[in-house]
Length: 321
Image 1 (cartoon, rainbow, N blue to C red):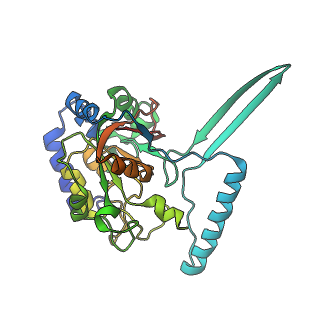
Image 2: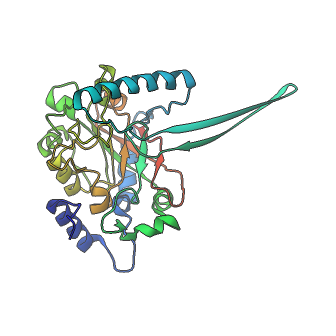
Image 3: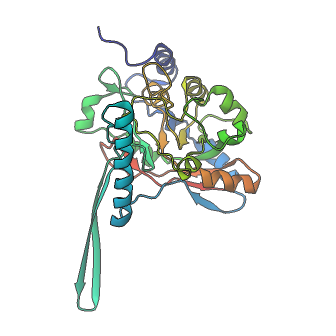
């Protein structure tokens, strides 16, 4: 028998979730199902200034900027191979935009076709239940084979309406640092220290770890295909998230990969509890804005495009406060 891809503690969390949340004959829609009328009203009540801020990193498609990014990535790859004497896998997250412009006398018309990789460490995206699975199933349980025909998590989530109270957890502020480092993964104690209001099931957790400052200082975030520790949330932090029943989690850094198997502790909660994750969220400006407003809460609106069979979608989450 092959090794269980889930660590024993994750398997225990999944078993507990199945017993408490699953109904025979009905597909579980995971954490988004916790976002109900009460959760939405909690969020609406937190909008006091009428301001909105985007939590999306810009999707770069301009040729000159892409050329500079490619040059920097190539240099990083050369440096990695010189140090590790190993090939650095390319991080996914590519975007291809084909723009067509037509001039017809004094009239003009523009159109475009876009294709993108819905995952990776670059663009802000929502992971669907069909992103990570175990034992030939996605969370639900949904057979993996359904992704070839009619898997509908993203459509269901889009129609459900992901709008709920947002609660910011500013980890660097709680630690007194600029950003989270690879040698000190975010723990349950860190999350407790950063939490300033009581949580309710279905709330959105905005877990800021300082990635914008990290990258502004010249560092590049390690792609998930590289098996080494990196800044992010560790095992006890993942357990903390599962225990607090969020409707959705938005974060800038991902899993710390600080365990012996370099496993993805938080991402594994997609299978274990159906956790809705929005990766690569731009949280630094939001943290500063909420701090200036004297609050740590707001209304999170995350409306994915309803694409059947999608494993994830690029998304522009909005925080209203």
